[in-house]
Length: 206
Image (cartoon, rainbow, N blue to C red; front, side, top):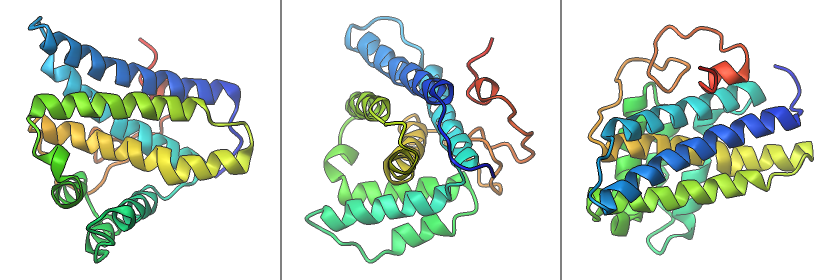
């Protein structure tokens, strides 16, 4: 693994993909608000792309995605009025073997610590997720070139939140994630190929 050194090009590629995903979710929400023709598969695809994005960033920077994800939930639960939790959910994430394991653990966390959102209609949940994704893209855009500061922000917030919302979008669209052992990509592939250029990894090229 090469040392962390975020180039402007790579930072821009991640921001562009994250912004595209946030835009796709927002576009869907806007269209259903106006009773216009919408594209539900675009939300399923947005979730897959988020999961893929999280895995690619984590691999490239040497971040343990599951550990970062579990620590993020621990911090969120500790700040909650019902927290801190008993650490059972974060521990399930640390030892997860599939995207399905993560989906079930995230659902349990959401039902307990985000009951207000969990109880919303699916339409309202998507609107809420669109706001979070816009906020996440803005937060990513503010990352500095300072290697250590950027790595902390990516590990503590960006990678876990991108993973979380990649899972949430699948759940809200009634997509059961694969119970097979983890592949590298968020599309649940069991035989991943090396991703090569980031443009290819993020599906930014035609």
